[in-house]
Image (cartoon, rainbow, N blue to C red):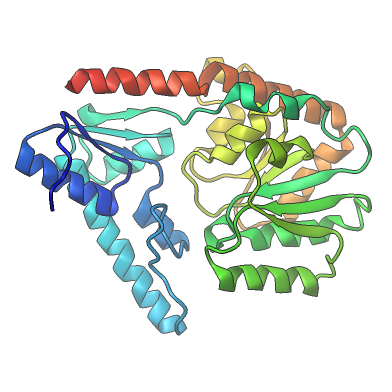
Length: 324
């Protein structure tokens, strides 16, 4: 297979992309930069049925076979990650949580750096024009693909717990529903069983501006994350967030270091797979619109200061220049 000639090769994941980039480096002698957004082996172990590149690792079969497949692919992608770390000239990830995992898996500290994702701040300004929870009819949304690792079921159960306490609230799941059709059907069935017809809707995928314009708060109930773009987008739009304590979520919401933390929290952090805790956090925002608005403003300031898209691009330009 003939590959395009380049002065630097950049793989955007471990797994198959990292494997190919490592082979190209061996053949060409050119530098290999690795960026790892999601830690694939960790996500598979946590329940992912497919990895970020679209490769499906778990298909419908018996429980015993699923467990065996999960062990196999966790081990396989873990070995591929270690191989990529060894071959790469520079290793980038998006958050400190991932950085620590990379070091634990044998990545050389001198190769590693953190370049956070960036959010298109100006593109979401319109979504921030209305204050959260201002009209007495709260709209609470989960933005993400409907897959097990996003744990949409916890969001649905939290919505059920809130229906009597927030009788005017509306709940929406915004994101693609075709990546795991069986899980989507399971979520719809759960919503029906809990009597959420008319209170909870699946919208499918929407442009970011449409996602956040009508939302009062973003909820993320994931079992595993790196640095979720949905949280950055919601913060950029001035929406308070409720997130699980996974990946970089806590540092995004509360701040990664002293200067960042001084901006104040952008939302509330809950344990994973705890519908009651998620519901209580949403209720706290609904009952205190002033606090919710303050958190929304803190999130906007955090994105503008630490997570601007321009800053992310500048850091990658500097990295490329190092190897050109």
